[in-house]
Image (cartoon, rainbow, N blue to C red; front, top):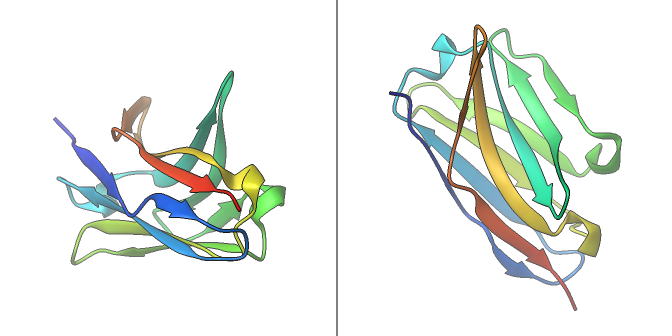
Length: 114
């Protein structure tokens, strides 16, 4: 069973940065893609993703502020979040996709407030 564990969330002020980490129990190159989703009341939306070939994709709202990256040796995917805004607040979930299955971590809270 694939296990994903997020860390790095917290409470920050607007303009500050956070780096989220997602540790995987499996080789991350076994997955078709991995990504980060933000959960707010009523929706869970894709923030950023990276596929097995290294191609990245971002939600328009985070382009030029967030960067997704990975370290295969450590089996970790990161989300560097800069210039954080109050609208970035939410629970961030790590996701891994393989074939038709989705795996999720338990989520980490990010709160951006002055």
